Amino acid sequence: MLSTFILEESKMNKFDVKANMIERSFFRKVKNGSIYLTGKGHVNEINKITDRVIYFNTKETSSSPNSLSRTKLRRAISYMLYKRTASRKDLQSFSNFNSALMGLLQLILMDISKISKTVSDLLRITIRGVRHFFSGMDRPCRIGFNAVVNNNGHFILNSFFYLRKKKKVDKWMQRLKENDLKVLLDSGAFTLYQKLQKGKKFEPITVEEYASFINKYRDCIYGFFNLDVIGDSEQSKHNFERLKELTGISPIPVWHSDVKNW
Image (cartoon, rainbow, N blue to C red; front, side, top):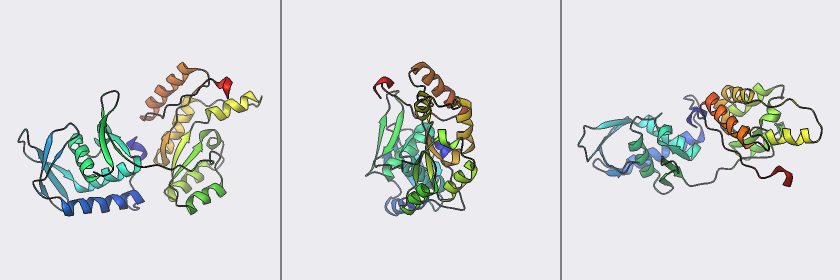
């Protein structure tokens, strides 16, 4: 989900600051000739390090050195601190040598990272830790916002069910952006379902409407849940694929038990 992470050159967030510190500390210790394993398990050698570039090559092939901008490396570290997980495809945005970058990230974040294969046999690097989201703010309000900011929060949960009807939603999202807050977005499908069950009248939430909101405010959105349909797994699956098509991002899948037991 790289497109949700926008780096602003004029304003460094806490992940950028920490990434810079980690990168500088690493290069104070590493030496030319150091070796490490790429994501695929090949042996890479660090040939040369300058103020701007790191040069490396794969020892098995004796190829001429490849290079990676240290600026892009810092951004990749910042992205890992922010997202905590990344596939090789995600890392492609930082370097064409994504397997080499993945291995380098594991070396830099050695104490907290690991590389593994997904069930679909894709390589993924993950760092340990807990991400805290301030909940109870599915309906945006000033009191909740101030509570998050005053407690140094960076991630909140909002519901699209309420955001879509908020008169000053642009102002709300801008306020979040200015305070370096990211939104985990719930579709609000279950809230809508509950209200309809009580006989209240509300407009249905469409995939197109939901996707349009995500695309408009994607620089504020950490991730988003699928627009699931209560009691209809096939339609939920269709919505998942449609959202992925419209946004270019895989939604977070939603699974629920028999709604009769709620």
